[in-house]
Image (cartoon, rainbow, N blue to C red; front, side, top):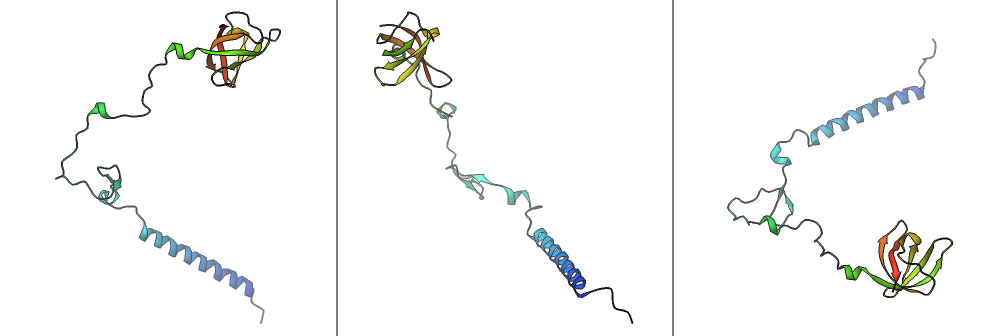
Length: 151
């Protein structure tokens, strides 16, 4: 009599494969039983109460509703008053200006910060230690002084 072609390890592998297949089927049936799909629309509804909280109970129709005027609703950031043109003008001292390269820096008197200035932003010629008035704009790397003139 010849030996069987199936060895112990082949039998074990086959048993494990069958067991995994059964586990997979069992989990699939379990998921179907506990699934939220197919529930009615009433079970999926969510409501917002008078305080803005999400709730699963519908609002009470006997309660009096609050009337809100459209003008009272504020969305976003409050509008700022336009800046006074006199406030935009700053005063400072030229700390460094290289006329051959065409740029320099102005030290603001109020904030003590150093602000970049380019010769394109000048209305009059300036040199180091000059007192100047200027306005600022947002540049690529920070504030840039524009409309620079001697004070």
